[in-house]
Image (cartoon, rainbow, N blue to C red; front, side):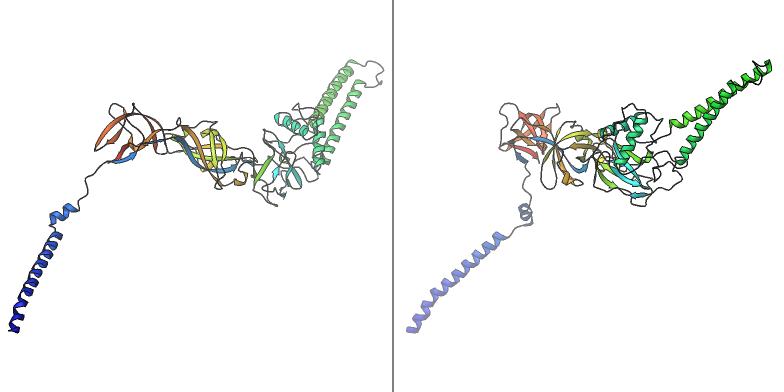
Length: 466
């Protein structure tokens, strides 16, 4: 009896297990079915959402439009140094003819790069002779001495006066006062000026003797003696007149030769012994010769002691610039210096000491190419940026600014309708509406806009793309 009860009580339990298993299989099937997708359902699930407009917020801010360029900090006014001719003989004498063309001249003391050159300084020595630096805009191109005149003589006289060697005036005619002043200048530098040499002195003596001889012949022709005892016969009288005429001609020729020689006789300044520079003091930037070289080409380059900033900008940007604009210069050390735009395009001085290119390494700008570089030059206060010379600097030139804070949108948000009206598209809920605006200053990727009334306000979303 007990065994029968056990078998009967297990049947409900088995039934419960079967029901649970069936339920579990059903749930599993439902779950598996819910995770399964048809190919069409899978493609639909991975399809990109419907495209909508790309927007940006309307901002209220100030705008500043600037032209920005990378420039170089350079010493101003570079100029090549050239000797205009040979120097005088080592002893200061003029030698046989006053010419040293047949003598190979060599540098005996070279210039020193980086040094300051002042008026009256000895720049270098060639064959033991000094090369003096004087201020003047007319370049040295000839030997200056007795008988010469012109603007170069006048600026020599002016330089002598500034150095304390007054020649008695600035007439532009080289006279004895100039010769004396030149001699004093040379002595103050430890040299002798070019004085007449032995040959010149001998030539002067010969010409003076010729004049004396002609004068004696003239005197003899006028007083032929008392041998005839009277006025002489007709033939003798005619002969005397011919002798007198010949003597006069001989005297005139001797006088003319002496005067011509004396006109160039005296203390001279050889063409190679002076270099005129328009601005002094100057900085000796580069030296191109060394001891032993022949100074036949450029011997160096001088610059102003003041620095400028050279840069180039695209020609479209250059149209926004003009002389007198304020520029901010920022070298790599972060120090900001305020400068001024002093030259633009063809007004930028050419590099007289370079390879024919414009400053900042450009061969010129302009034309119809909007990307063609246009050189600009920025001046900075004296003493500023000197330590940054030969380095780079960022140049920022402000060309416009908004009147305080204004509404701005990205440039991409602005478009023009067929009637020429500037508009922006504004997102209103799910709709996009056109709003007419007036465009203003553009800078930094933003453009100033003025809507009609309250059609647009800060924070509104404008369409910048799809």
